[in-house]
Image (cartoon, rainbow, N blue to C red; front, top):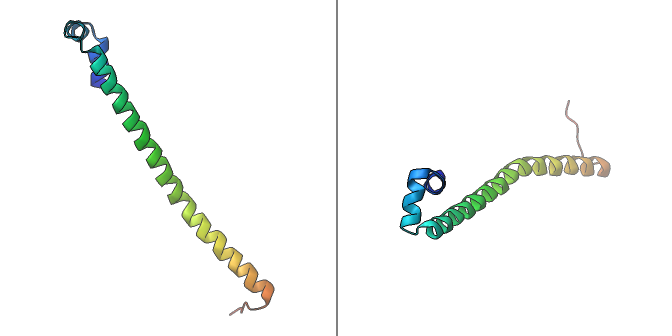
Length: 79
């Protein structure tokens, strides 16, 4: 992505881009790359969120079951 930006912004390459009328093509390429990167980051955030939530959910269920068994009088204590 940085390469495309440098082609569009640096003086020497920008002249060649204008001469060959590559500007619209390079801008579209940059937009496609940006969207792909944005979707990948979103997928990683979801995956990271699941990795963080699953252990907390398991802990909450375990504590909830302990409380329910305790309230029902079916919890045995071994000391």
